[in-house]
Image (cartoon, rainbow, N blue to C red; front, top):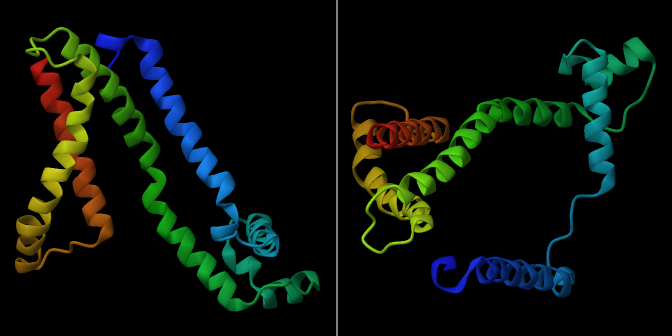
Length: 182
């Protein structure tokens, strides 16, 4: 867009899109779901604080432990601590995500500058970053149709964690291919 209309127009388009989205959120806020109550957040933070004080163990946040060791009655029950433990276990998957995201963002800027040095046959170099969503839209049905059934056939797990790892591996492979092209 900036090739024909200038950077100002490109930034104006983004501004209008964000302003429109913000306006929809502000005007329709009564029709949307409300956020969780502060009491849940307070229980969550208090339970995590008890776990940290107890040596980073969630057992220290359990109501009976708090009653026995600190003679304190806490506003959560055993099930809350069990749910918190499961949620924290699920969050371990996201530990690597910031590293992957940094590589992904860096690669998108590199693709734009790499495209600036290539023959693009009239396609603007910043349009090359649009190839990623197109590739994802083409690749996901192929994975769903062929790769995941094959994994199931040979008795390999294909749960959410494995799918994320496969996505990370494909992203790394695409970065390696772009490096080879460069």
